[in-house]
Amino acid sequence: MIVLGVILLVIGLVTGINILWTIGIILAVVGLVLWLLGTTGHAVGGRPHYW
Figure 1 (tube, rainbow, N blue to C red):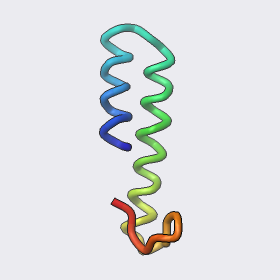
Figure 2 (cartoon, rainbow, N blue to C red):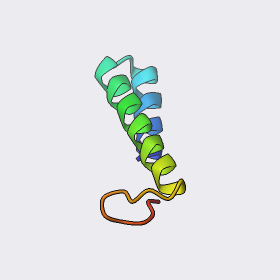
Figure 3 (cartoon, rainbow, N blue to C red):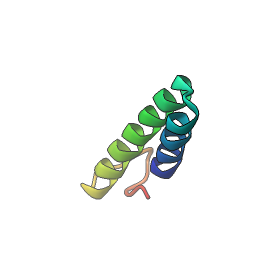
Figure 4 (tube, one colour):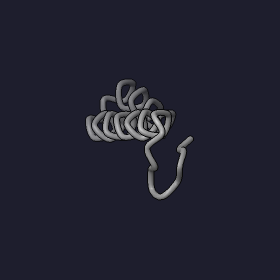
């Protein structure tokens, strides 16, 4: 999810399409939050880890 967010950020930056930029930011932030929750030991979506 983080990688997809970064790819959309780059595509949005290069092409100038603002919606791709916005979606990329949202995906990157959600991916980072899930990654941080998974590494701290919280169950994410019923799983003890998330990667």
